[in-house]
Each structure stands twice: as structure tokens, then as C-alpha cells.
Image (cartoon, one colour):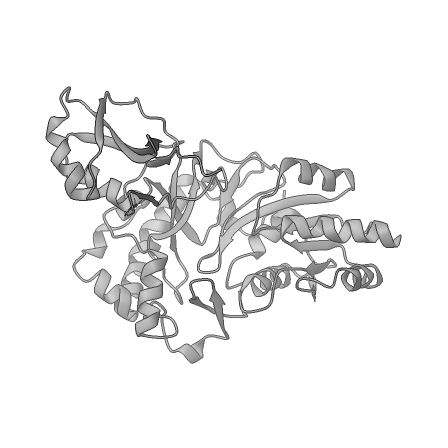
Length: 407
């Protein structure tokens, strides 16, 4: 089987050895060449950070930090290396957050995913991701060009024109959101225009439901999905094995307790943190706000990097209780401030038309009375405390469970 490059089939020992060399260099690059990480990492001995496990000693970077820094030092808030003019594009995502981009060398690393789909030289990709303000269009265009394909930069909308163009140009592959391909295919049926040359679809930016993937398969289209963000580029992707999502070779992924930088056990659901090896934009332990879990073993396709289950929901479980915001970071603070607590979950419901907060803690102690003051101090609210033995709470990544009905 062909692979995008030899990085995909490295042994674990070789990948760990390469990381041992690359990670300290990237961290020093971030500290020495960006003002934000110069401040964030100034008190850390980066020579000690040579593995994924050791990354957990560093602080988490959240999107809110980018927003604050960019408001003070536009456009990139001191998180990029070099001058603004060194970048080919400046994009805007909701927030607003401004992201840099370069058009050369598959800067967002989408080529690896598109190659895994089987797209390459001789293919014509109809790229239906937006080219307007956000980087998705350029991300997938650069990836398609990296594997030798030609690109029709269609963007979004204008369905009938897109269908006619796809037929007349001879488009063989689609890139865009999962749902928009169905819109195009339904329109082609309505217009009696044959789009049968489209055999592959690279999708992202939304859920690919099994029923929709099957519908495409029934029409002779192989549809795979990737997981990425505007800030980080490609994070993980499916191969033809369709058995989990393989972590990209240009990033390091950790799964942690939401609101915390603490790694979860393998297989447990948690928040996705990503450290990039992109020397232009070295985001360190960047919190995506997405939930996933590590899959054991390696992909049947032969690619050897870690796999994750894909998108399993949002980590930001922030809610309001009695008019006060309660955030995952507070749950993490509550656990950290009590050495006898292993894990905690806040449950909120309604009793007699009033908000009610219950804090469940896993601990080896039988008496939780000593935790009551900590609940009030951290959450600024009174709540019922329930003590349970270690291993009682489910490993589903939930730290704040809102049981109130909003119907």
C-alpha cells in the first residue's frame, strides 16, 4: 500500500525518538520567537519536555487567550513567529479570532488526508469549502495541490451552476461539508445531469452520519472525514480502513479532563489538546474545546500513529446555576484544591422551581464534610455533597451535567 510519506509508518520507538528531538526545539522556538509564549513559558525548563507525557506539566492555551492577546496586539496577538508580512493570508473565524496562513508546502497538512482518500494526480477536486474570511477553502485547496490534483474553487452556494460545472469540467472528487455533496447530487438528479465521475469525497466541518455515508457509497462515492481547526490545520483523519481517525504527523494530541490539563486514562473521553510542530505558528497544548478518546492499537491500513474516535461533543459544559456561571475549570480547581478527591462531577437540576446543585466526588474518604467549604469557595454557591468510592463516576468526559428541561 502507498503512503503519503514514511512518517506515517514509523515504529512507535522511532516516532518517540523523533519527538524527543523535535519537541524541545519547537518549545524553544515558541518561547524565544513569540512574545506570548515568551511570557507563558519563561519559568519552565524546556529541556525536560521531551515526550507527550511530560507536556502535561505545561499550561493549557485556550481560544479565549488568543482573543484577549489579539485585541491588545493585532492581528495575531504575539503567537506567531516572524512579521505579519511573512504570511500570505490573514483569516477571521468567529470570536473574532485571526489566523495566519501560507499557500506553500501544504501548510495546513491536509494533503495527508486527501492522499489517504485516494485522490492524486489526474483528479479534479471540486472544493466547496468557503473561501470567504475563514481558511477552510485554502486548507483543502493546498492539500489537493500537494497530492497533484487540480482544483475547481467552487466555494459555497450557486447549486445549479456548481452541478453544471462539475459535469462539464469532469470533476472526480469533492471536498466540503458532508451535507452539501448531497445537495449537489440531488440537484443533479433534478436536472438529469450526470455526476457519476465523482468517486471520492473529502469532508469536514460537520458530522458525517452513517446513513449519509452509506447513501454516498450506494452511489459509488467513497466518503472520508477529517478533523481539523482553523488554528491548527489537520488534526486527525480517516483512511480507507474507516477505523477511527489517525492523528496527523504534524501535531501531538492529548486527551485531558475538561477544564484541566490532566491526561485521562487511555480510552476515557476527554478534551482534545493539540501541540503543533508548525514552526510558523507554534501553538502549545491548545484546547480545541472538542471531546474525543484514544482508540487502542493501530489502524488496519498500516498507518502507525495514535488513533482517536473522532468528534464526541463539546468540552465547554459551562452552565448557569442560580444566575452564576459554573465552568469546567472550576471543577478542575475544586479537585486540585482537595488532595483526597480523585474526580468530581457537578449535577444541576430543578427542585420546586429552583436550581439545585449537587457535587459528586470520588474519594477514598468516607466522610466528605471537609469538602463543603471548598464547594462554596470555588463555585460561590451552596450545593449538596455526595461522596462515592473511586471508579463510580462514568468515564464519559462529563464534569458538569445539566439535567434541567428547557422544553
